[in-house]
Image (cartoon, rainbow, N blue to C red):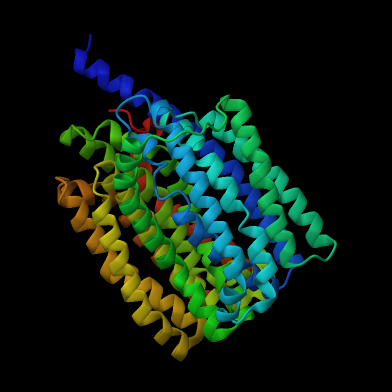
Length: 480
């Protein structure tokens, strides 16, 4: 029979393992649906349509980063009963979302003019209605995350997918262009929020406690600042591309960026839905948090590294096969943005770890440094090499500057260098073998579906032997 400490540890890990499995199912279903929808829409819409929508989406995610001043995440870390602070959190979220959307509505013409896309003004105003929905649902969604209720999230997100996809495709088929993307997204968000409230039986409750508000803002404002900087960092490339190269180039770049973001949107999202709560539960135990961090790093590295290698090395046949030849111009950016995908997965894990340990100010400074570097190098890349230069600059800053910076920040919390490197040894070895095989396939074949099939299949066969011994660890998730 195990000790009392072992039983407590197992009790802590059991809901994390279950949540990871449900989060995996949720993400696979959601992202598979989004992926297939993206293929359909790429053949119904033009790069110009995607460029106009991208302008609106840049505005939306910038607003969402500020929407509730970071206070809703405090629900996950709150040491007592989170229901005590939920009314205050909800009030702050609703007030800030209303103010932010009003500013968005008024400032939309100025923003789209600066992006050289005045035709996107109405789309910005419609899509950014999601800010109001997010302000209302954020506190309840964080309660669900705190309690590891990923089964409920599966139902909510599936509803969003069905509504968004059905309406977007219907509108695209009937010739509504970029508007189809905006209207479908807002409608899906609104309907799924009602499902969230109904299934959780937690409807928004308003209230305001000044002392709680001060604590929440002290926690949330640095986090909101870091979040805003992260959003700006991940979208300044789109601002530069749209402003300097036009809407068509922006549409091509966004398609490449979306493909390169798949490891983040799938693998990182699976872990992030539970990582903050998981790290928060072990924040007082240095040995246990090191173990949890190392295993999460391994879980992320095993699928992320080979997928990013395939995206980068087989960019041309991937784009032409999935989206058609009108989109092949995006492959020159995709081959470099795949490297950015690796760094984003690593940095988001580190971000959640640092936030859980109460080091949100560190994350803010890291994002600020990343942003400054991009402001220097992205315009140079766009000027000299177009969207390919933008991608090179973005990936170069991430790999050369930010990956080491995040590693240092994590090690300063007590995580050893060995704990950072050991989980990556086998995935890195397998990726090196995969890269060698794909390069040989590229040498003997022309860019085509055949090259994609051979490179992907033979590359994966070269990768699997290196990571096969890790299967028990991966199957066990966070088992001790």
